[in-house]
Length: 307
Image (cartoon, rainbow, N blue to C red; front, side, top):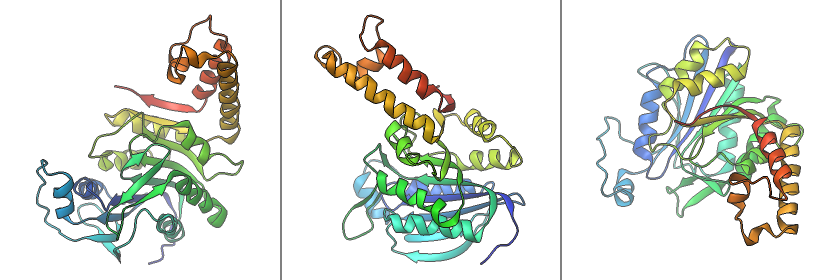
């Protein structure tokens, strides 16, 4: 199903419910359908659903609502308001497989060309270790963060397209290690990241509000303003981060400088690494290095809200 008209935005949602998050992931599709695609934006979702029996085993004390549409596996939809178009049934696909993530993003870019792209990855997150656990296979799988970042950066190499906003709808993705991995090369695919400051709710982001804000600001020329509007319109602790290679390289050097001073002065004997950054004292021998590190971090923060 090839599309030729160029819209302002294509929003790609890779929603992994091949685990105990299946009820929340399914409801995220229903939320996206409250707004759906329009003349200005395409909304495409690849969604996985695990057997409800697995959800009951892992979450025995949670009451799960009965859904009108019951199926398992992975499917691809073109999201419309109220009712979506089923594009393809992908069967028992492993959503933690980096090849499947790559194929989905590349296919969407080639099939639904737009001036701007937002990629949303929804599921569990385990900081800089791994994301997207999939329990639908013969054994549990997780997608390594390094694999995730490599796949995303391959998109630029293979399509020439940059992702304007990467939404990490997963807990504990706000780490400098992940941002650096995305922007470690001069030519990187992602321009900006939107994620939680720490952890997010089990229900994830409200896709109706997110898509609505993109729709209302589809002609906005400054992505920083769009990100600010999204954060201000959603009642969650969110942060928008610029993926800038030069700035991230400077942060890496600042971290090395802080660590060197910390070790040379044996700071670890009376201060933890956390205290080193958050309980700074002017008498500390690493005071200036930490200040420089903090200032460099501020330069990649576009906007945030901490309720």
